[in-house]
Image 1 (cartoon, rainbow, N blue to C red):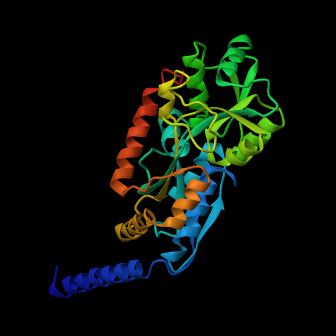
Image 2: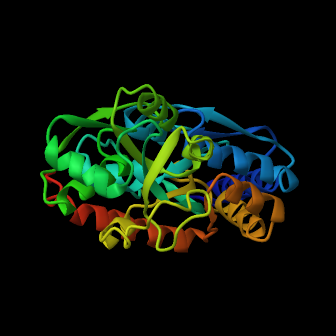
Image 3: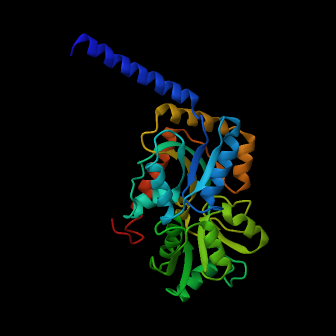
Length: 326
């Protein structure tokens, strides 16, 4: 290689580095999009909108929420994977689409670590609910009905194999029944499952607490059990998993995190991680999260990665137990 060619190559490399650095420093120069892979009004949507509102203090451009539901969160998740790696399309990651599905559903088109993991946002309790008009008044009533009507009850889920399926299946198995003790009916999002319960189309549903709160307060929905170690203020009459003799249900709690497509520049990841670190002490954001029934739980990229990997491994270990071949 002659001297002139070498100088030209070095110039091009230096220019590319300058452009990349300048671009990262100017980010964001236009509105950003966060994809919620579930329907509007669900846990992912609530978390995404809380984040979008809170980061207005820290970014010069807005974060616009776009709902892309389908296939238990896989459609929206894959959309982000295929998006440009420029930080303008991000994902509101959920336990179902980012841990449970890759661990248990062979149809999942991506691996749990196929994304750029930016940070954990919040953790929310899981709860099982029935209609306020239901003859099922307690968790023990649900167990009794499952035994008496095994195979003739149904429940609503938000996917084919996600936490809204794992939770009830664990209940069935812990009750001494088969994994198919009640028929699963999959919907696109939590609001649809709520409508199904209220309309009497299904007997019950289990999912993150947040979207249920309004109907629980009005008495239209009755909570039967929560996955947390302590009772929650939004459903004080609902016993904990340990209180009903099923402490292993504590594994199944919801969470929301911020992901980017694979190959997201480290400068952009670091910029977002610094903003999330500031949210940890942001009173307004904390109030928003607690108001929709979740627990603020900001984690760094490395902490989040370790947490999600542990979740993936825990669900993977459940595969044979809940009757899913691997």
